Length: 113
Length: 110
Image (cartoon, rainbow over all chains, first blue to last red; front, side):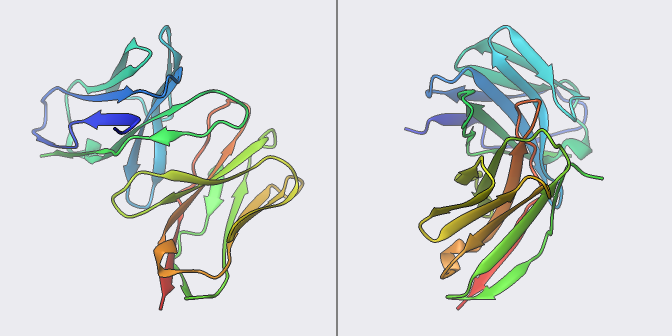
């Protein structure tokens, strides 16, 4: 089974709708991240969490919110989706060690019409 | 100026050649440097990490770091078509969170 899973894998929604993207991990890592990827723009950090009680905004948090329900679960919400939120969204985890590697989920492809 | 600069490419090399991917960064406190590979439509995966000045070799991959010049590179020897992907440079600075460059697209043609 995959260590980092994301649901759904693909989603089409309409402008103004609220949607939630979910991420679960079995790696036992405290740190979790949400990124979006757009063609030509690379990976941009939306939110990150270093433990269950710690939530921090990344460089592009406007229009997004998150919830860290447990060590293993980190959800991303779009309260009122807009077309420029159409992107590929990745969840990632890391263990916080000096040599830490980020482990990415398979991604969620979101289309906002 | 973006924190992490990479040439977007595409960099096209023939099979068997050496591919050289470059990255510059602006955060002088960066201590850890990572290279991720991302195939089209897939998630990034770590292929190399380097923490000290100089070279680090792992199979066909060599990472090179020069902190004084704020420069890190990735060399791929004996390039194969399966190496065709986007390579993301990710220094980790004072925030302890990697900052990703936009990536360099590599195409290895037979």
